[in-house]
Amino acid sequence: MQSIYNKLAGKSEYSQSDVPDMQGRVAVVTGGTVGIGFEVAKALAFAKARVILLSRGQDNAEEAISNIKASQSASGGLVDVTWVSCDLGSLTQVRKIGDQLRKQEERLDLLFCIAGVGVNKYDVSSDGIDRHFAVNHLGHFLLTNRLLPLMRHTSTLPGAPAPRVICMSSSLHTSAPSSVRFESVDEINTDLGSMQLYARSKLANILYVKYGLIERVLDPANDRILALATHPGAVHTGQQDQFKEAYGEVPGTIMKHVVTPFMRSPDQGSLSALWAATCPEVEEHSPKWNGRYITDPGEASKESDMARDPELGANLWRLSEQIVKEKLGEDSLLPWDQSKP
Image (cartoon, rainbow, N blue to C red; front, side, top):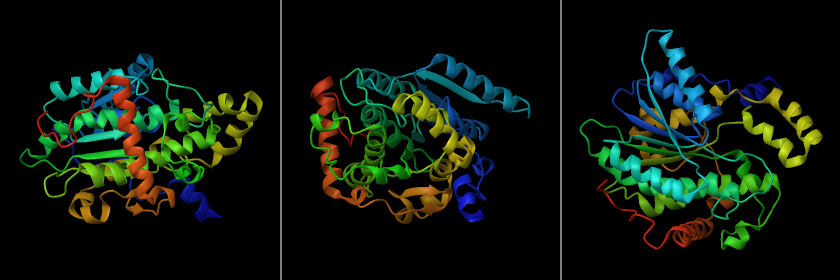
């Protein structure tokens, strides 16, 4: 029983203090103002990286930056953290902000795709797409497309470690219904229920890394860029408040109080992503780690059968490109092999 609790609670020898010196490196963290994203951003800032937070809420952003600066100043250090307003559910905003960052930044070493809708009721984005799919996958799909040229440039800089894309998935991807095929917008906009909508979007995260970035985009002969999917563990964040919206006030409140005592803290939940993004071993042994699904620091786990289905991966890629082009125009995606920022 104790071993099970330790696993849930994230008892790991690895900690945020193990993040190596990131002086001179730049990281973009979506959803970086709350929960796991905040903990990732804080650890990177403490390691001297320049951190750019992407999120919707200005109040959360100001509080997050203030907390990071206050924590670090207590130990006599300075941090470089900025915030850019961006709704990952709006393709128009994502393209605008992605282009802005690509043109204004001199380098980009790390892209953390963390922003997400939790287990919540069905709703649609401003583009008319299931909001789970739109925020958790599609916005990050487009953001990566706009930022990859800058990451390719970074990979050529003298002494620069290989840039990395980290997509936060979840073990709940295993709950995606077998009916999921990623074949049409009508399918995506079918209300499967709160848990299944979330699970489908988390399945998309793994497929995107495995059969999108690794198999279609990143050429190992020419691209020194790594991509990994991660699972944070069962983490107590503000997402549990969405249970009430998903299941009703009383059932949602009961569910929240039942599950949260067994959950990891956000700082523990940040460790798999931080390890995947910063541990030198990932680059030193990239054939072993690149494209893998990291469930704890130094641990890669087997995904579900659906997450290892190349046909589903191909369907997801085609549908993602189709939706972006339908909403923003045929020229809305940069060439995936573009190297000039």
